[in-house]
Amino acid sequence: MIETILVIILFLIGIYFGSFFTLATYRLPKKENILYKHSYCPSCHHKLEMLDLIPIFSYIFLQGKCRYCKKPIGPRYFLFELLTGIVFVLFGLSLKINIYLLQPEKVIYLGLGILYFVSLFIIAGINKEKNVIQKSVVYYGVFVAILYIIYSCTLDIQNVYKYAIYLTMMLILVLLDTVSFKRNLQSNDTIQISILILYMLIATNEYIAIITILFTILIMGIENMLIHIKLQKSQKVYNNKGKRPIAFYICIANIITVIGINFLINYGMK
Image (cartoon, rainbow, N blue to C red; front, top):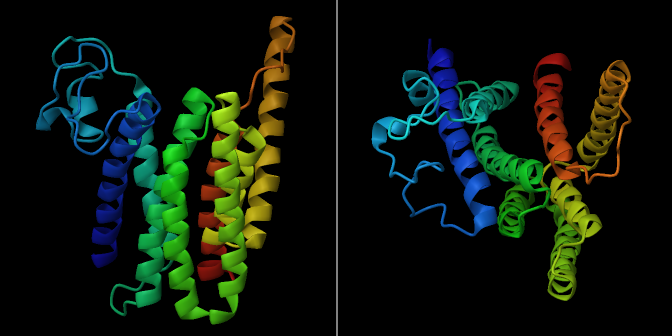
């Protein structure tokens, strides 16, 4: 019974975070405030009320339409909230938290993991929509990385030098990307992906980061194969010159990898 309550709580936390992710994905590229500005319909800009903002349920009750202008709301909002809820539940279950005998390190790791997933979801959403890595989210990632380093040092002081090196490299790359942006009015993709991978090295570890990269290559390869098959059937030529949202694939692959490894460690390995 208590485990069921935990699952429900994690799911509710997840769908509310999912609602926030869709808001952040829409507003951050527009440089709009994501904390204090009231939610509004992107079509008619009408201020949304409390009943319009209940994740998943509002979409269902309003039949996927704005209450005021009646224009359809994209199903991606509903799907993103649902997916986030499922991810948060799976992450919580993967840690095998014993409600009757709470382990502080697991509870802290759960909290830090949620903060980490927040950054990955927002990076993935914006990268998929705009094909950029939002710099403000990277700064948030630096903050989360520092929190994780502090937490890790309480468990194993030997790792402090390794984490310090990764964090220093990450900060240097953030500075280089800022200089590159000021000179060319656009961010350097290679630097941004390197920052993301260093962030993952700090928040997870080396072997999870390596598995993430391999998994990303696999996902992109499968997608390319499916596109080729689809275009062959329609007798069209595949144009692969467009910029791929690589950060999106890396973030999704990392979320799956982290949860999968946790399940293996806590349930599969004895």
